[in-house]
Length: 329
Image (cartoon, rainbow, N blue to C red):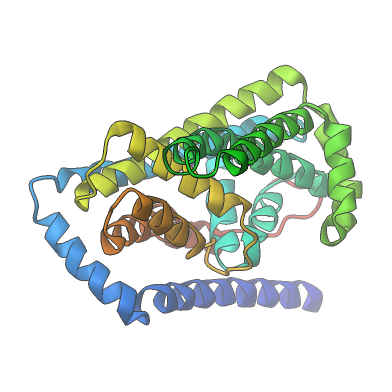
């Protein structure tokens, strides 16, 4: 009995720490940076008073659609371990999002999804989660490479043709390599084993070989669907904040920013907050756009798609129960 009470106390303590840390990091990220928050607040108020304010509402409406794609991916991935309903998959994604919010490189996402499973082979879910994240990375790299191609042709080809050609070949090679890895689980495990911090997880990645090429393709399409929603949200916010470009420039700038955010190493505790902003400001700066407008759109995107859902996910974290192996929740 004392052991059970001790476990319950620890669980309550962990939940409380997650809640406090999440809210604290939200406060630190938004309310203690006057050089960004105050300017962003003024621009946001102006944007919400404009005739285009409906775009903000539309962007917010797309939040559950964005994470709905991720939930469907997790439902398909988790089926190899146990039957998962779409609602359970969505709940697991929200728990993972909240725990990932307060950990470097969203590592808490793994723990959140694993804790939502009932299977005795919970830790084998690490392989499934890794595949899901890798599929999203592949989608980002594929689309981002096309976006960066625009910048190569527009700003580098005439002045630096040799360098531009080298970058193009590098991007093409990267896309091919990632697709080959995606459809070759053994090679992917070997790559993970070669990365020292991830080596300890190799024994739990055996589930990666259980997915067929057809399933991988389906997961990749879902990843591209989620990417399209995210990209559309960013473009809507850019329009709202008076960033005026051609459709091709919107697509190239946003996809290029997502690409750079994904490939630049980061240890941020706030879901890479800062990397995307710098990437977006640089690329859209090349297109002659104002820094604050782009920054406002990017911060708003982070707030809507990461911060707000992370707070919502706290409700699922608080009702999370640690289950005995093999015992249903």
